[in-house]
Amino acid sequence: MRILVTGGAGFIGSALVRHLVLELGDEVLVVDKLTYAGDRRSIRDCEGKPGFAFLEADIADAEAMRGAFADFRPQAVMHLAAESHVDRSIAGAAPFVQTNVVGTFTLLEAARAHWSALPPAEKEAFRFLHVSTDEVYGSLGPNDPAFSETTPYDPRSPYSATKAASDHLARAWHETYGLPTIVTNCSNNYGPYHFPEKLIPLIILNALEGRPLPVYGDGGNVRDWLFVEDHARALALVVREARPGETYNIGGKAEKRNLEVVETICDRLDALRPDAAGPRRRLITFVTDRPGHDRRYAIDPVKIGRDLGWSPLETFESGIDRTLRWYLDNEWWWRPLREGRYDGQRLGLLPEAGRS
Image (cartoon, rainbow, N blue to C red; front, side, top):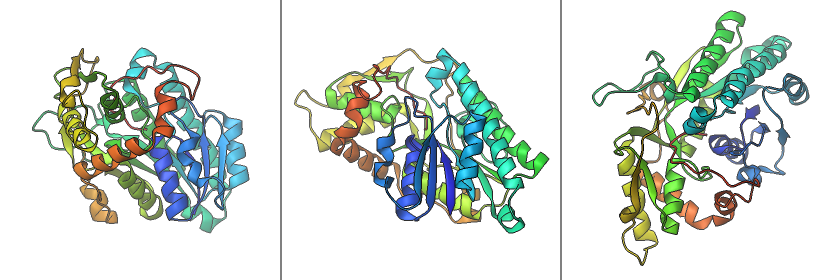
């Protein structure tokens, strides 16, 4: 396929691009603004491959988006570009509204113009996949059933509110204009190339350096964890096989309390690279909880398994081991980000358990 991928230099986006280019042989145009979380080094193995191209551009730039569609003429769009850090959205919501809402609107309009002009067979085959989050559903109680595709939206942060808005736009463009959109909502991703402000890489790197391991509140917030390469496989399957207008929830079937995640990383890292100062659990530090911190997320992935035959290949334990080994072996990637040298600024690294 010939696929335009927005946010393809981000965490989930780069995993998807590597899968499409290196494993499936697709032609891919990556469109990425290269903000703090976009890192072209994450897709360096795709550079020079047949059909691979990169465009540094803002999805809210209508002229640039029209040009990208006209030049590349994609058969599908996989839209992952988003501001995704909850703490950053609380500190300043404007970039989230601009990228997640205005940017999605702009991209949908560019896609609609491109799609409308296609010959009938190509028009029928075209797909626009909008990749979203489980955070749009709000918070679950300890005994509530997991989020399904019909769970009512109840966003609690500026981040999740803007993602909910973009989901609604994608569905409205299908219902109103016939644009063949599909929406996916995923649980928390983890794995290689994860930006160091997110919970799992932050804990890994702080633990390696003997720094405090910050845990919000009592550490009892529950998340459903999904290995990023499993997510990439699911997205590639959805864009090829799903019907327009459908929604699919993608989860790892691995609910864990945040404290349990941190303790698991400590124990596995102690086994892989012991610390002379003692077990790394000693570094765990509880910090003031964030405003509006959702207590529990959980995804029910039954529909995508039933309709498309997808299921995660990695357990949380196997995925964490793969993630730990990657960070141990790839200091070249994370060290410049960690020290603020790659993008020229000191990064405020917070224990965020987000996505892209």
